[in-house]
Length: 202
Image 1 (cartoon, rainbow, N blue to C red):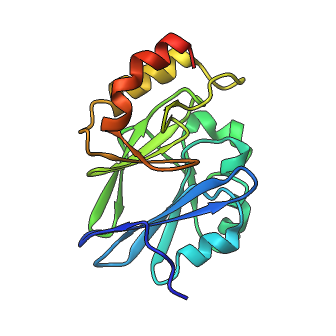
Image 2 (cartoon, rainbow, N blue to C red):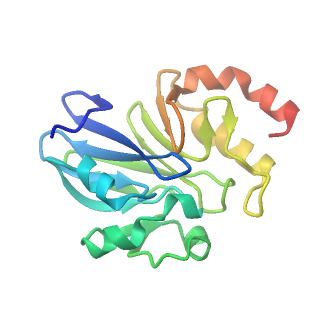
């Protein structure tokens, strides 16, 4: 089996698989030269996640946030030897035993490429995005059409708007956005709608 590619160039390979009843996006991000890779969100269906790692050497899992639908496969991937990281603020929320913690500004080396960590509350207090060049893995912080849901016990709408405004909408228009659910978008597609989101309140 050859697993389909979501994006690739001479430096990076991105695979995407959709898992579980909430149709979570799981991304495998690999360095083309070394074939070292990370998984973004062990959301569900561990077997399918490992299928998406075919031909690359996945070394760790980066968790965008601790909501239950994003961590259902954590124990299974840990049992297969993949350490799992999460932000300190979501450690208790997730009820998973993280192998390492991820903080704002951490630079995560994946072969020849480096993912930059952006702390972007507040779909959850410990929400994270991961950025490489023009590629942003936004978790549930930013979707096509608006921010992640804040109408829950872990959300706060003014804070997520500040996260998006100060951390994400400072990126170039042609930055691809790969969210935790649904289709891709770009920063340039979403930025013009910021005031609409603020006016509607969600």
